[in-house]
Structure formats: structure tokens, C-alpha cells
Amino acid sequence: MPKKKAEDPFKCPRCGNRVSEPEKTWTVVSPIPDKYGRVSITIMGSFKCPNCGYSWKSVIKKMKSGEGEEEQLPANNEPGETIEIDLSDLDKIDENSPPE
Image 1 (cartoon, rainbow, N blue to C red):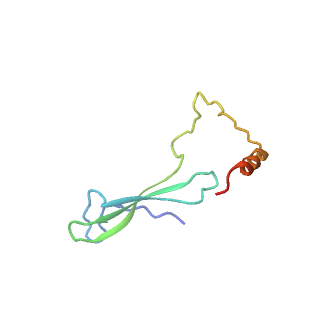
Image 2 (cartoon, helix red, strand yellow; image 1 turned 60 degrees about the vertical axis):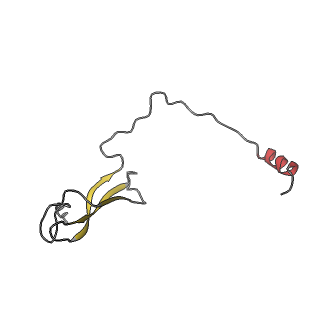
Image 3 (tube, rainbow, N blue to C red; image 1 turned 45 degrees about the horizontal axis):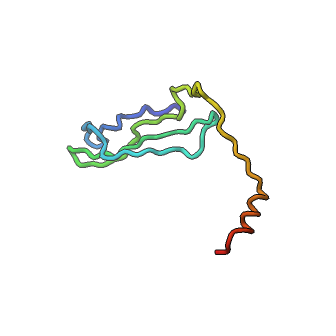
């Protein structure tokens, strides 16, 4: 099924007047990534027409995380310090600590 061509989100659906900017914007992030590991991010907007007073919500932009950018590791990619703890040492600390 072909996708519908997105209409201008800044155009009032009732009278056709173009709004300069949304009153409020927010982002919606999908909780599950696609098969390539990218997350969908949608920027939504709330609009109010100054001509007729009609209010509507519309998608301003949709994008995928990592789209158009290539992730690269920094040149000085050194491993961090490894800390090892013996769990039997924790039992000794609990035995010697005063009761609360």
C-alpha cells in the first residue's frame, strides 16, 4: 500500500491558513528498535490557527536514531579501570558493622 503524501503540518486543516510556529512541541520515542537497532523518534506539535481559532496536533518530523550519521569511536578509545571485589569480603564487613 503506498504511503500518503504528508500534508504541510503548519497549514490549518479547516481554513488553509499557514501558522508560523507551533504553540508546543514534544518528542515521542518508540520503545522498541527496528531490526537494524535504530529507534524511531517523532517530533509532534500543537497548533492553533490565528485566523479561525481551530486547534490541531500534527507530526512535524520523523527520524530514526543514527540516520545520516556514522558512529565512530574516539581515537583515544582506551579501556576503563577494572575493579574486582570478592563477595566473601562483604560478609565480613556486615558481621563487624554495628546493628542499626
